[in-house]
Every structure is written in structure tokens, then in C-alpha cells.
Amino acid sequence: MIRTQLLTTHGEHLQGGKELIERWQRDNSGYIWIDLLAEEPVVEKQFLLSMECHPLAVEDVQRFRHPPKTETFDNYTLLLYRGITEFNKDLTIQQMTIALFAGDRCLISCHPRNSMGISYYWENAHSENLLVSPGLLASRIMRFSVGRYLETILAFESSLTELEDSMQEKPNDDIMRELIAYQSRLRKLKRIFSYHEKLVTNLLKDIPQRLIDEDGDIEHALQDLFERCERLHGLTTMYYEICGDLINGYLSISSHQLNNTMKVLTVITAIFVPLTFIAGIYGMNFDNMPELHATYGYFYTLGAMLVIAAGFGIVAYKKWL
Image 1: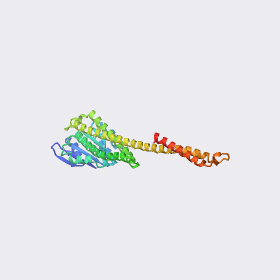
Image 2 (image 1 turned 30 degrees about the vertical axis):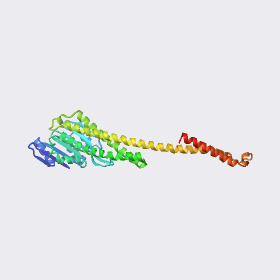
Image 3 (image 1 turned 45 degrees about the vertical axis):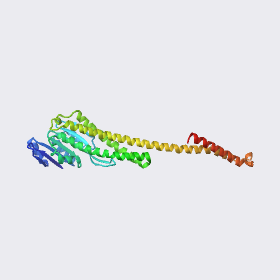
Image 4 (image 1 turned 90 degrees about the vertical axis):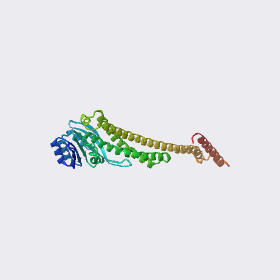
């Protein structure tokens, strides 16, 4: 589906389809936002090429799970980032690639499914006077998506605190499995946010002149976007490391408990080894064993075994237990 918004030089705001694109091209004036939602790849490619988008940029847009990036061409500045369609409290996400082509008096957005950021600004771009600044509008759309990420990541902090308290009070395998799952999801998010941070950093280092010339404060908008991306990357990195520390703590506790168990078993074995040795000797039943015919030999042997066991037990308790 192709939908458009056109702001004419006379201040008239129109919404429609391809007919507004033809009017915008014919008049060679005004500002237009073209949104491509769930278009067939072939149709999308033909349309983008007809709008003079660079072929390499079109290939990047249509490549499956292309990493977020920004690149400036003759006619457009491309922002390619990961938007989300679902972000749950357990950090499971459904994401999609969103492409924004910011050109002279024109913004083209491409996305395979509904995007909350694009839907929000589709309703509010005109009222906020953003159609006259395609670059600023693109940065605001990405900022909206990053803001949704940030809200869920901050909400996750309370869940992580509860896990940390549970780990300290009563560690168990269920908490361990949950932490491993969170760490895996945070690793993916950390990689995504790292790409986003680099994207905005590269854009800030060399802001295209066409974006600076727009009727908008693009420098401050990009700085604000960078700070959000940087905070997201920092938070996910911190939570990832906390999960790793908790996992290592659980393994240390388990190892310590196992060491204590093995220590007790070793002491028990050390006590019974000499007793087993004595029982083995007197269990051979040779004829020429004088002790076998002693009247009180059985009691002497038991007494010796008890003394040895008590002695080993006292030494082990004082030094090892």
C-alpha cells in the first residue's frame, strides 16, 4: 500500500495515494511524505528507483535483516534501523527493518508491517509542522521507536531486582534457567542498540547539508536521539553483565555446596578406611591367628576401632569441618 501526505506551498494539507506524488512532481514544490507499507519487493524496488533512490540503497532496504546503517547519497539520506512490532516484559521481541529516505522536500518510509512510530507521526506530522523537515521527521520517527525500547528496558529493572533477591535468598535451577534466557535476549538487544548508537554517531559526525538547510533543528534532534540510543546500549550492557554476575554467583554457590558435601563424604571415608582395614585382616580366618581364639579379642578389636574412629572424627571436626 502506498499512501501520501502533501503540504503545498499555499499551506494546503492533503492525504491520498499516488496522485499526490504526480502533483508534487508536476508542481515541483511543496513537501511530501510517501509511506510504503507491506509492498511487494518488486513493486517497492521499481517505485524507489523511479523516485531516484540509489540502487545500492534499495538493495540494502530489501536485504533480509540488514544491520542498521545510515548513508548519504546524491538525492537522499538513508536511515535503516530496527523497529519493533512487539516488545514483551520478558524481553522477547518481534522486530522489523524500517527504511527512511530523507530527501529534498520528500520523505519516503518503507516497512513490511505496521509501525507505531510511523503511525503516530502519520497522525501528528502536520500538526507538529514536521512535513517541511523530512530529516527531522525521520529522526523523530526513529526516536519514537527507540523510546518504546527504553520504556520496556527500564521496566525490566524491577524484574531483574526480584531475580537478584531470589538468587541471594534461595538460589535454584529455575532462577538459573530464567537468568540464562534473559542474558541471551539481552545479548541480542545489546547488538541491536549498538548498531543504532553507531548509526546516529555516524550521522552526527557528518550531518548532510540538506538536513541542516531544512526548516528544523536537526542537530539537537540527532543529539537527543544519540543520547537515547547510548542510554539503551548502556542499560542493556549493564543488565547483561548483571545477569552474567548472577549466573556466576549461582555457579559459585553450587560449587561451594558441592565442595562441602564432598568434604563430609571424604571425612566419612577417611574414618571408615582404617576400620575396614582391621575388619579385613581379622576376616581372613587363617588357622594361625592367635587373636581369633582370644577370649576378649572381639571386644578389644571393637574398642580399638571405636578409638580410631573417634580420633579421626575429632581431628576432622577441628581441622576440616
